[in-house]
Image (tube, rainbow, N blue to C red; front, side, top):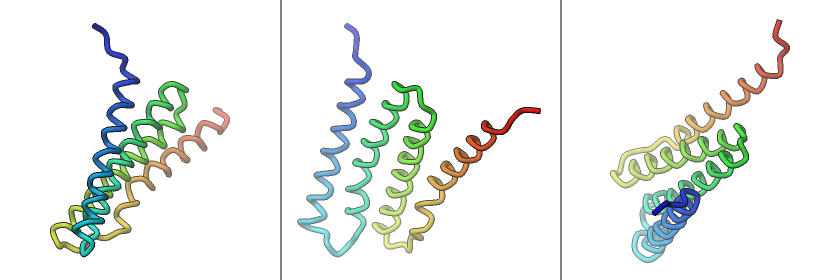
Length: 120
């Protein structure tokens, strides 16, 4: 029996979306005093989106699209970290959420600039 990997990846993305719906519903029903479930509820959507973008980048053989997937994955981890900080009552710095994705974007722009320069 062989597995169709792209189909399995899409199923995982949809399972992530269902988990996000459950967490967002819990936020709307029970925990409106804290933003932590809202951040955690958005994480599965980002993860599922990253999986789909990564799959598209692999199929199209595009480094730019794959870089976009890495940005989404890093933002997913950072958003989950921020939600955890809110859940524990710690003061999370929201600007730290964007540091990882910004570094990936900056690296990609730098690589694109280097590849366009003529080699001497």
